[in-house]
Amino acid sequence: MDMLEGVGLVLQSHLALVYRAIHSTRGNSPLHFSDECVTASRAAIDGYNAAWEKYLTREDTAWKSLINW
Image 1: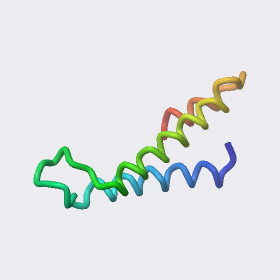
Image 2: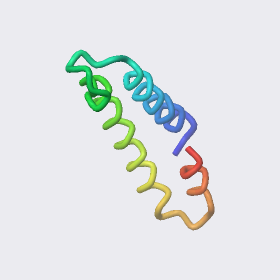
Image 3: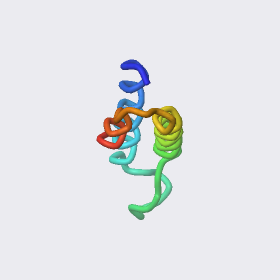
C-alpha cells in the first residue's frame, strides 16, 4: 500500500465518523444511520479489506502498520 492509498483509507474512515456524528433524518433512534454514513462506512471497509489482502501475502512485518490504523 502506498502513502496515497493509506491516506485515502484514513480519510474515508474519518468521513464515516463525521457522517455518523450528524443526526439522521430517518428517526430519533441513535441506531438510524444516514445513507451517506452507510456508503462511507462500506467504502472504508472495502479499503481495509483490500489493504489486508495486500499485506496478507507479505513476509515482512508491514501488516502491523495496518492493524494500527
